[in-house]
Image (tube, rainbow over all chains, first blue to last red):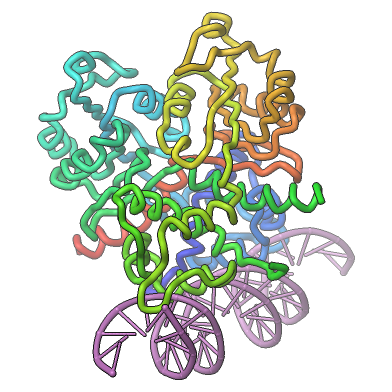
Length: 213
Length: 213
DNA sequence: TAGATTGTTAATCGATTAACAATC
DNA sequence: TAGATTGTTAATCGATTAACAATC
């Protein structure tokens, strides 16, 4: 309980959870570390070791009960209850995020959407009416929202981040390519597809290079 | 040259590059490992060590020439020339991706867009006309495209992945929450915002917990 | 020259993995 | 009981970091 959990373990838990939820959807009841390892590309020994940080909930000779494991990991991550999200930016990207299935599957619900464009205010995305940006602080406090998503044009990113921080948000997902500054107590996550592309590209050039020469 | 580069180094290079390009845009000429470390949250010693894997291009007492470093890292990653992308799915998400600034900044250009909805075919997103899905293989071969992006509804994800693979794509970015299967020679990248959220959530619950008790 | 910062070594630290006894 | 798979130890491996001589 008091033991410090390595960063790597916490990074892998969401991947386990994702696969486990899919398995549960397929009515599979138990899974071995070997099978889970295949599906997540993680070494089975590592999976077992990761899980023992939080107790021992496997059955020797059988494997792990999927329903139990899902619940346990959700509780560990704090994903065992619904989290409300505020979305800033009601353009294409904002609409796509609001309609994203994966969010709901893991207990994340967008309950407030903001846009500075008067033409967009009042329109609906799904069931949520778009509010003007000036109402951001009030609405977030009312709803007790701690997570914000930035889906506005790059120029506005820093300003929106500041507003979210001022409104008490603790986690920010930044979808712009801009490097945004936030105070230390706020966790900023940049979801930049380009970073991933560049990373993968390295291995592609190597492999092609070998094949070509 | 023949030395094997650790995975971690390759993961950090895109982060360095991103910051360096922003600095270059601000007309900064040189940067020290200390400053670069601040901006990327990486230990300065680590940055210096990372860079020596590829040669030594800093000046003692001065730092690194930004223009040179940008070029070097781009060449290492294979990002020193333009890469064409194929985008499948012309909905909100697809439109957002096609209009994403960050891609162009790093030499990625969407040059082909596909959708199975006849109503969308022929419309334009930016300068690109949406093509029917049946033309995917032909167009990709014509243009020599090696990178594909899946931005379709979850149900269609696996099918699209199969088509992209069949058309010779080597890197796939999957924007659906579905676990897609691809052959070993294809690199699949799932950009799932939920995984990041879940990860961050863990630390949030801990910190709030401490504050609350 | 004096100050700054790199390149590089050597020490530390932590994460990964193989192996196997425990046990379902 | 026999087979399977966990939980856990111990060994390995690699990555991170501090420190400092080299040098701009």
